[in-house]
Structures are given as structure tokens and as C-alpha cells.
Image (cartoon, rainbow, N blue to C red; front, side):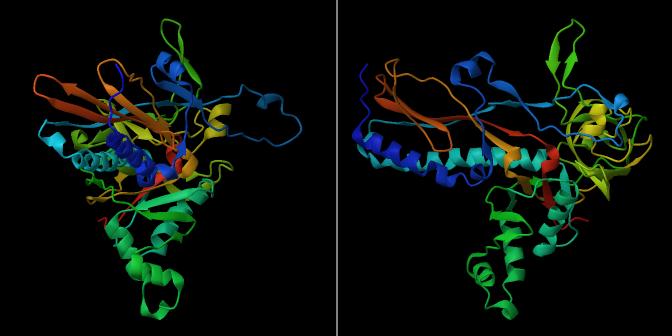
Length: 421
């Protein structure tokens, strides 16, 4: 079947594709990653494992006889998990006004780009383990400096730090900057005219129209239930039938005793008494409690936490290399919930740690529909497909995208929450 898409539709499609990347504010701050070609991705079910950076250990002295051991290469699963479509149907009467398709094309572009931004936002906001609890309204530098301090003391890279602030948070910070006593400064004028605060404390900051309000933690009094709950990093595990598979070392299970276990939810943030964070490279105690996030609830009385609790409890080489806390949680250790008041999350992350994975799918001409396709500079494949219906002389159309997101290391992302009790 010959392609019968009109010239007006081609212009509409080209204009939508041209402006698509401009709306991908968060996507531009993430790293685009395409692991395999289209045919290979189909064979592996759109899911692959990518290697995580090594962290090495060092030892004192010339005689290293007892320190040699196998290298442990960790990997992280990433997948193409989102397919979004914006579609509609026009009657023969509607088709008299060609402008309707153009206007819907603009709306589809806005919605699909928003879907990508939201997926990246939620990945960083709910999986990032760093949590900054602020008991006051946003003030500006001091708030962001706390995120900088927590990142830096744990050895998170200085380059490529991004932060996305809720509109009221950004405006509150700008209000504190736009004071008469500093009215002659360029940054002050930007804050006054545009509610823009720019680069602060090592972070590129952006006002974000995506929003997610994390509810207050309502698990009640919660303690660690059982001793020796530490994670031993390993590259692979062997099943009961002998097959070997990769292991996701970003998370670990933690058995807890909670007053209201049923109310514990994904995204809740907490600390564990006596469990401090360490610098990722030097392994020095930061003097600050490690912050954790609830990722899931795999079984009764158990939560999956990020990051995995790696305390070097059994002294293996892999544990010493990837250690992230000072001690194994003690049985009965108190868990303190940090998100004590419902509030918007303001995620921050390292650019290379948050991935955007462009997906692929095949829609060919001549199979009952007409197709336009393009790939944006960020690698997002967009298709516009239309099909006519002879029964009622209507036309169906749809815009489609396919993509995935991933957070490689939970400790290289986090959130600031304000007005916490």
C-alpha cells in the first residue's frame, strides 16, 4: 500500500519531532545509554546487565600473601520498561479542519516528553538513597549545601551534579536571594525577575514542573529484627538446578519489627541506630548515619532497602571493597523514619548515574496503516501511525515512544524534603 499521508501531516510531524528534545529537561540531565542493537535487544527481551564501576581495597606492607583474592565485578540490570502512546480518532466531519491534527500533535509532544521526564524523576526520587530532612521551609544555599556535604563526605563525584526543585521550593529559595541589600548583583536580579537561583553549592539547579508528594511514614515504632543482617556483594549466584545468574547488589533485605508493618511503603526514608555512612573509597566513618530508602516488601516482616547494607561483617575482599556503612545493624536497633510530614520531593543526582535508554519497535508501511518515523538527537524513536476506517469514514491515529530508565548506584542520588516535623 502506498503511503498516503498528506503534506500537512508530514509538516506537523516534523515540527513535533523538532521540538521534542527541547521539552526533555530531566532527560538532558541524564546519560543516554543504548546497550545493544535492535535485533539483539529483541533476543534478550529488552533487558541487559551493565557493569558497575570497580571499587578497590588497599592493604599495608610488602607481604600481601593473605590479601590476594578474586575480583568481584558487579553489574546492574537495565531494561526498556516503558511504552507510551498518545492517540485519538477523528470523524469525517472533524477531518475538514486539518488544524486539529496539528494542535493534537503539539499536545502529544507535550505529554510524551512529560512521560519521559516523569519516569526519570520518579526513578531518582524513589530509588535515590540520600535523604536530606529539612524541618523548615526552603531557604536557599544552606539547604543545597547539605546535599553537597552528604554527597561529598561519601565520595560521590563532584562533576555533573543536578538538582530538580519543586516550583514553590525554587521560588522560596529565589525569594531569599532577591533581597534589597544585594539588588545590584546579577544572580539577585535573576532571582527577582525569573525566580531562578542557578548553580548553588556544586549543583546545577532547575525548576521542575513534575511533582510527587511522598506521604509521611506511618510504620510506627520500628526496629531491626535479627542480628547479622549484612550483604555480601557477589557477581553471580547459582540456583538449585545449577544455573548461574547475575546479582543486583544495589539492594538488600532487612527483617524488621514494626508497629504497623502494613503501612511501610516504597520511598520511605530512614536511618538505623549505630549504622553510619562511610566514604566509598577511603572507608572512613563520616560521623553521620547512613540514610536508606524502602524499595519494596518482598515478604512479611521484611523490607528491601537501598543501598544494600555492606558492613564487611564477614571480612571478605568484596565486602571491604564495596563497604558503605560502619557496622552491621544490631538486633533491636531503632529505625528512625525521616519523611515525617507529607511533602514534595526534590531529587538530586549525578548525571552519569541516571540512565535514559531509548527503545525500539517495528511498525512497517503497507500493513494496513501509514507510518511516519523519526529519531531525536537524544535517541528517542517517535512514530506517527494513522489508519482509516471504511465503516464510519473515521481515522485513527497514534503517537508512540519506547524507553527505559535506570539508577546505577542509589547512593549517587537522593532527595530534599522540607517542612518535616
